[in-house]
Length: 348
Image (cartoon, rainbow, N blue to C red; front, side, top):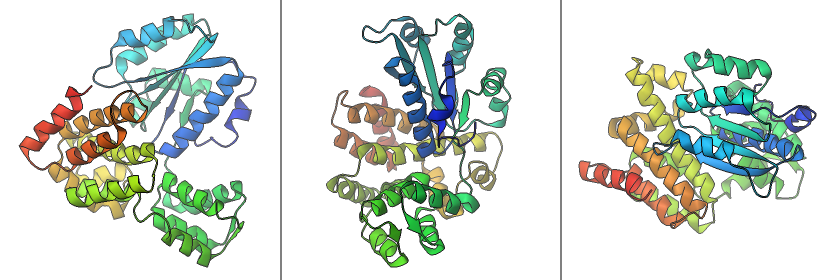
């Protein structure tokens, strides 16, 4: 099912929840909205328990088996959310495909990961999920389709806008759906439902001086001083920490994916096309690839997982963790890289 987040909950009503399902794709906003719809549907079906597990280098298959087999004291059925990194964890998938036929129907494992590549799309477990309708793709909206997506989003927010306003939002956000949704939300909070070009220009100009995506670009360029300044500005205006972290972690994920493409024999231009990185962003990724290795990008992802735990209140200061990530991402020397490794693995 491709980009079917709108009305998804209603379409699922009456269906029997599967033992496991998959949400994959590069559009975080669509992933989040698809997941929200599925959670709401599962809750209505009695799945009131919820547990989460991040599949990182510390993950052990026993964790999954324990979560699936343990009963929730306060819920008859539960959702287990598993977030993979760049690609699905083979051992976990093998375990799920063996367990699913004998499931008692009291557990639904909701898997999520980045966009699957051609070889992964051809695997038997994915074909079976897709055939049963339990594979949901949060596909990238092409630039040519962005205006229609923004227009529909504005209609859903009870806003009216002409083509100039739509194009203004599209150009400012450079195809990033999460950023587009944020701008539309700001416009909706103003009160008027008829958004003129003048009003849109003023509102977008009056937005926070920096965005999480400015921070992402600055970190990719390795500009430590500016990156820290942007981060402090975002924290000062109470920019949501999960949004800041998503922008930073997304840069690390894209760097890891780029390195994987390069190791597979693609050149940088081919890798950018395959990963659908906009031309306007290629320069910052060129700089980042020259500075950040595959190993470093993987350490950054581990550091992002630690930061996520801090944001969720599971130990540590969230703002300090975000500063640590920025320092690590803008590291330039072997000594700094050793610090990155210590931050990623030492603090758990």
